[in-house]
Length: 68
Image (tube, rainbow, N blue to C red; front, side, top):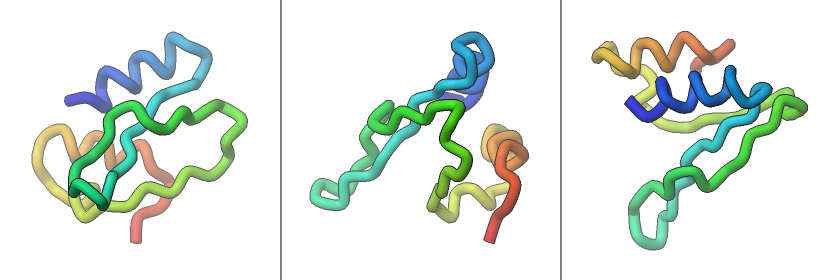
């Protein structure tokens, strides 16, 4: 899963990580489009997939403080 790789990278690179965005014009995600730095205190992530109980998604959900 991409986020596992990014989590490892985040730990190794002083907390910075690239996150995907979504291009509604073409209906596809854009990988590594948003650079999240350690000084970013709030990161809002959208997507129903964050509530999936499947392997990989369950672990990602644990990285977030709040889910609505």
